[in-house]
Length: 109
Image 1: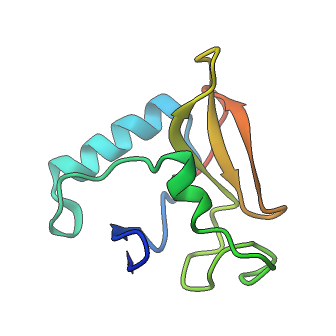
Image 2: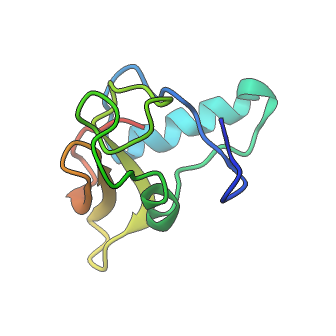
């Protein structure tokens, strides 16, 4: 799905399983290797890019995101690391906020 406001392309559904940050980077590398959907420049969004997906009210199975996105992913990794570099920023879609989480924690992409 192309976001006309940011000119970014987003997957409407992400990973089938939750994964930690390192496995996530490998998963994205594999998407690029097979040219998923004809593209080989997939990456994690920045925190700002991910936050642009947030809706002001619950829209999708209690999530603060457009219903065009899969409701299975309750939160997603971003590419942005916190200052101590052991945590990355994640977008949490059920309360509609962001927080830093440990890189070895398992989340969706």
